[in-house]
Image 1: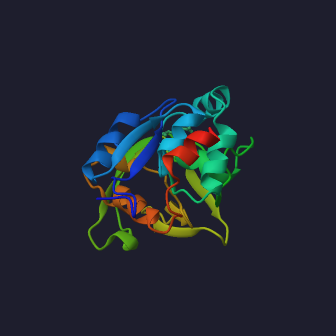
Image 2: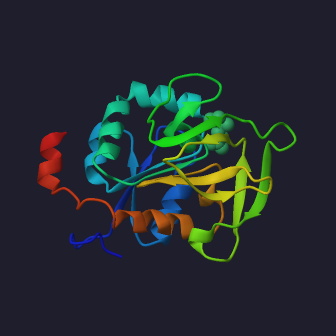
Length: 213
Ligand code: GLN
């Protein structure tokens, strides 16, 4: 696989301040792209898209601000780069937090409620129908997942859980799931992220990117 017009495989950043980084890196390698851990604003100049992994969104939010990543990541997304948030990553991308608190990268017209599947369902697995990925169900692993409590008109629901609550949403080049697609061998969501690169503007020249950072 090659990043269109660039003669190199796509480079997918994974926010590596906390959380499930390694499994996403393996998934990215499996779909023929190169994973790059993003810890510093300048790391963003190396990548074509960014994954916000699962973890603890409160800790991740703190680290994002400590590392000075909030504005650079907002600018990266505003420049058209695809973003993919999983679990805590979905919380970071939500426009509205039902429990209060400032949104971090408000890029998805949804409201989320943290840890709202409740005690009994703290962690669970479910076979999910995700029509954009084809007929075969995708096995979803949910770990203290957020509940999407509201979806606004700008966001598209790609899949719902067995009770009908949205668990995968997309808005333009921003994708998010309440579950952890990196924890199962099914790579269709990581492939979808790579396809979203085709809708993105062409990559910046390395020299240009370096000059900006
Ligand atoms: N419960 C975590 C939070 O609210 C998310 C859990 C996860 O990413 N697996 O941030």
